Amino acid sequence: MRGELQALMAAIRDEGLQIDLRPELAGKPSQAGSLDEMLESGVHPCVDFAHQHARTGRFHSYGEFAAMLDAIRTRLGPGALRRMHIHVSGIECGPRGERRHLPLRQSDFAYRALLRALRDFRVEGWLVTESPRMEEDAVFLQRAWRRL
Image (cartoon, rainbow, N blue to C red):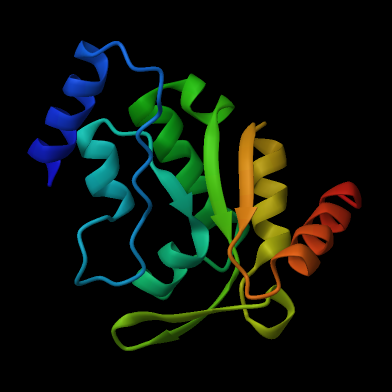
């Protein structure tokens, strides 16, 4: 996967295309697409925090979210946090990782801790909710952000 991503990035650069390649973190441990794999390849990933939660069974705390953001900043440079593409939603997990996306309030996803980490690391970019109730959860997250 690393070689293919690097070849694709080189082709984009060689063609002079003004696009970002943002492969999304995968929600199942059997799939290629962990944060470490993305960072090793030098690709700026689409960071799906729910997928990371489903993949690992972790990422319920501020410290865990901060560690992810610190790894991105350390390995890709501080500019990586100024132009992030982020996905957030609740998620139902099983022994093999992601089962399905859920509305935030019907899940155990620690969205408040994530929002605090995004604020403290001064993350900029795009945050998209993949909830089955996209508009409702987008407004819900926006209100939670404003209360920080």
